[in-house]
Structure formats: C-alpha cells, structure tokens
Image 1 (cartoon, rainbow, N blue to C red):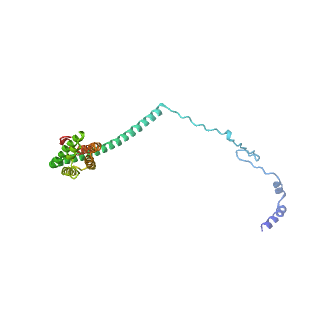
Image 2 (cartoon, rainbow, N blue to C red; image 1 turned 90 degrees about the vertical axis):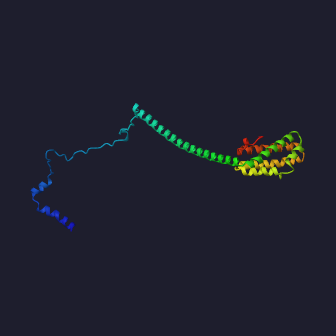
Image 3 (tube, helix red, strand yellow; image 1 turned 90 degrees about the horizontal axis):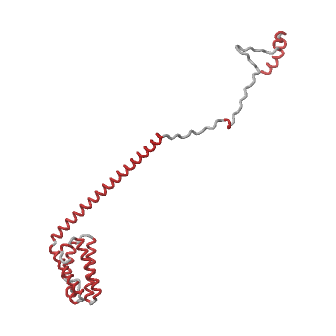
Length: 235
C-alpha cells in the first residue's frame, strides 16, 4: 500500500502543480535567523586530544615539620612511656604484695610448727633422758676408739643393736621426729651404728673410726633439725 501511494505521488505533483509553484520548488531555500545570521556551512570546531605529557604531573606536597609538631610528638611519647612504667610498677607491686603475703603465711606456719615442737620437747622428759644416755655412750666409744681400745668400745656398745639403750634411743627418735629429713637422719644413724658395732666386734680399727664418725654426724644433724642440739649435754 505504501509503495502504491509513493508511485502515484509524483505524477500527481507534476500534473497539478502550477508553474509558479514549480519555480518556487526549483529555487534554493533561504532561511533567516532572528537576531543572528545563520551559517549553514559553519565549520566544526576541532578538538585536539591532550596527550598524557601535556597533563600536569601532581607533585607531592613537602612534609613540614615545625617545633610545635615535634613538641607534640615528644610529649605523646613521654606520656605513653609514663603510662607503661606506671602499669609495670603496678603489676610489680601486685606481685610483690602476693610474695609478701605468701612469705608471711610461711612464717606463720613455721612459727606454729616450732611452738608445737617446743611443746612436744618440753613434755618429752623421759625421751630426752634416753637421748642424753646415748650422748654419754657415744662419747665413751669415741674415746676408746681414739685410744685404739676396741675392747672398751665393745663393752659400751654391746654385741648388737638389740641392746636396751639402742631401743630406748629409737623410742625417742620416733616420738620427736616429724619431718622426712629427720627420719632420714635417724635411718642413717641406725645404719652407721650397726656398722660401728660390727667393726668393733671384728677388731677393725679403721672401719670403726669411719662408722663412728658417720653415726655421730647423723645424730648431730638430727638434733639440729629437731631443736634438741642445745638441750643435750656433751654435744
């Protein structure tokens, strides 16, 4: 339909258009623009692309350090240093307080044990008598061995550890010994005393001297641990 309309339009215009109209159509059209003259052939404005080299390169602004900024930095560092020292001092004070409290508790416990021990020793008059007899016998044995008189030492010691004075000494050891260290010295004393009796019986002077020193040393350590060292004569 559109094709038919377009094909009939040309003869219709040519046949029905007067000459005056035809002359108008053949003349070039002129337009007038209000207030300004229009140029139909106005040249296009060309744009020149800017290359990367023509762009301004950003320059980093220099860092300006003033006396005021330096003062602020030093002041801040000083404040943080004081805060750190204060925190460390507070922690050290807390730890020191805990250590002092633990030390105080230990002192209290030790004092309590010492008072209890003194009470036990004060009431153990019979046991202290057994120990005093032990000191006398050891003194006599030591003098005899020093004089190379093993027969005299044997008469004091007896033939075995099953003698009455040894049994009584162990009764006192058992009652007055409370710590593991004290019990270890008791065992050392009994072992050395058995070796002393055996060496004296065998008439071995050198072994007798060694065993005597060992037994006497163990007994002295035990009396020091129990607090009896200054309460027995002859030590």
